[in-house]
Each structure stands twice: as C-alpha cells, then as structure tokens.
Image 1: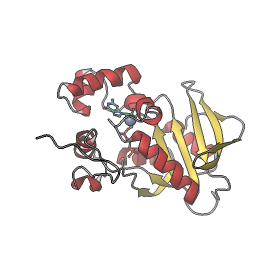
Image 2: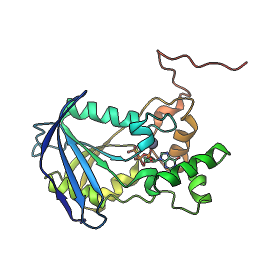
Image 3: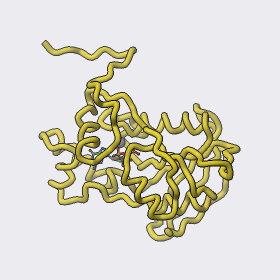
Length: 215
Ligand SMILES: Nc1nc2c(ncn2[C@@H]2O[C@H](COP(=O)(O)OP(=O)(O)OP(=O)(O)O)[C@@H](O)[C@H]2O)c(=O)[nH]1
Ligand SMILES: [Zn+2]
C-alpha cells in the first residue's frame, strides 16, 4: 500500500454545501491529493459513496466540453453532499497520467482525426498510465475499506480491489453527451470498456441549449 500522510482536517464551504477537506501527500511521488468529504459521513455503517476523480485542469477548472470531467466532478460533489461519502481528487493524473502538455498534444492529434486512444499511441505514450494505489491508501487512512464507487471505469474498480478496497457496487457517473464530446465518450465506451449505456441516444439535447443544425 502506498504510504500517504494526511494533513489537518478543515472545513471548506462550497456552493454544494460544506465539505471536510484534507490534503494527502504520497510519500513515493510527493504528489499532493485532496479529499472532500461530507461532514458526518458514517463510514462504519455500510459502504459510503466514493468518487475517485482524476485531475483534468481543462475540464474541472475551465469547463471544457471536450470531456465530461468537469460535470462529473460537479455531480460527484452534489451526490456526496446528499448521500454522504467522499470525493478523492487525484492530482498528477492529468491526461490519464501523461500530463497536461501531452494531453494537449493528444488533442491536436484528435483534431486531425485520431481518437483519444490512437492519439496517445501516436505520441508513444501509454493509453492510461494511472495507478490507484495512493487512492486506496487515502481511503484506508480514512477508515473506508468498503465503498460504492461513482465511476463508469471497470479498471478503477479492479485496481482499488487489488489494493484492498471492497467495491460493493458501481454507481454510474453518466453525464448527457454534447456534440463536442459525443465521439470521445463513444471511444471510452467502445475502446476503454467504460459503462456508458446512456450514449445509445445520440446528442442528448439540453433544454436550455439549441444545437445549430447545418444546412
Ligand atoms: N490522454 C488523454 N487524456 C484525456 C483526454 N480526455 C480526458 N482525459 C483525461 O482523462 C482523465 C479522466 O479519465 P476518463 O477516462 O474521462 O474517466 P475515468 O476517470 O477513467 O472514469 P470515470 O470514473 O467513469 O470518470 C483525466 O485525467 C483527463 O485529463 C484525452 O483525449 N486524452
Ligand atoms: Zn477531462
């Protein structure tokens, strides 16, 4: 198990409600992660809802529509407030572990027709370089060893279980697709085995938005 050191527990008030926050330093990499937990989550009782979220600066901070990360994070913070549980925000996992500059290199290749998997391959980089040992270490340090995992990615489940976390169930983290990310989400479903059953219906149209039809 990866050694992680937790800092002080503080309250962070947010638009979703107050969270109990804690920073965690991974001894092996020096990377600092963050947990945002619903106050009063009863971890002894059943399996709390947990989102293991990989850093995505473009999506999480700037609201990029190329991916679903930003909306998944918002959804996770809301659900954790409602149901109790924790969001583990994993830094150092940008671009599925290849870093920000390489992710943007991969985007440039995607603008020339590659899909998200092919783009990483063309760069000579792993399709997914992420590891969840630190996440498992953080959960264990929090006393959480049984979870309901808010994710569509079966590999996350496998990794967490390998590191001693029991995933009682997968809770889908499905965000309605957009024109800008439909193909990306379909690639995640078809080539990365993500459970994205809601994509069957193409281009969910949001009530407040009009998709401009080209003639
Ligand atoms: N290399 C690369 N990384 C991307 C791309 N789009 C998003 N990412 C990164 O992918 C990571 C999120 O992974 P996803 O595959 O969206 O989702 P997941 O975390 O595996 O699965 P969920 O738990 O269901 O969200 C973040 O680190 C993003 O920065 C892309 O086109 N290329
Ligand atoms: Zn993203």
